[in-house]
Length: 146
Figure 1 (cartoon, rainbow, N blue to C red):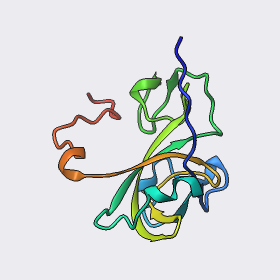
Figure 2: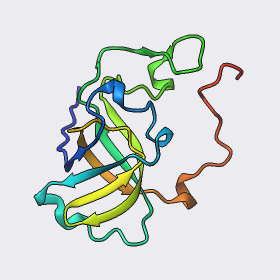
Figure 3: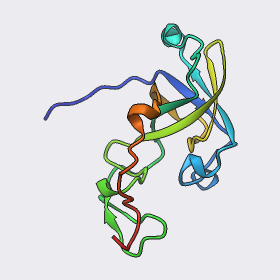
């Protein structure tokens, strides 16, 4: 079996201290601001993020279970296979959020719209580009009437 090694590039400072504090998706509470502090050795990769309104933020959900293979999405009657859900409980607890960029100040990126807990490691950030990232004919997986 091959292994993968990841190294956080930063850490989130968030008002959400415990799992019950955070919304199930950051976009459900879009005005809550938090900060992504990029570690000094990666500061050269930030720039001013000019013309970037939103970022994909890949997170390591370090306070979740890594053993479950089913999840129960809200509003869905029966549990679903894990990989058909967005549950944070996964073998590799990588979270994918979209954050609205508020400001960049040195190594700190202020964002809104994440569901990260305080102290969550950041694995990577990438610009959200609606021209290639928005798929208008995608199907909705979290409904029972499919």
